[in-house]
Length: 237
Figure (cartoon, rainbow, N blue to C red):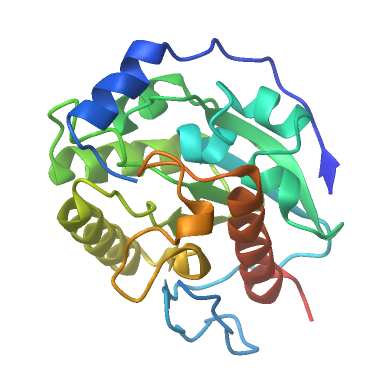
């Protein structure tokens, strides 16, 4: 994967992460889209209308610690090859830029993200930290809509947030909201955490760290899943 570096962002404070754990704030299976401009939804995915592109697919990333690889910011996570975008396992995907920082709420993402004019796809993973910050799902929807408008990518993927050990119900509710928001706007929703969860919807033992984050290997599983979804959905045939 080719990486185009952007200006590093500041590391999130340890207090933010601890607050998230203590307040129990939150965190699929790959889809096989049909070979047309509108992809059919598979388990863990819902389909919008794809604008297909020649390789490499230029992907912008917006998110929190589960986008940085829990290493502070997206640039650090990419340099350490821990962030999921650094582990997609294919040269057909190129990192185009974006913004992600540990502890970020959807509101902070919306206020900090900048346009990424050459992005073919933006993958947004937001909502994990919103509960601890007292933000509603309505606020999450508004913030994501703002992020999409700012980035200006041809295609939008809302990524599911991961399992949350102490508040599994919130993760389920937030992901249902994200899927509905994607369907309403003709975007895509994809849950790349299926291979990291048990049948009960909690973290598999080998991938669990603190109930919110996963290991480098776990982010690799997510990255390859998301990478395959992006390839199948947005690459010209």
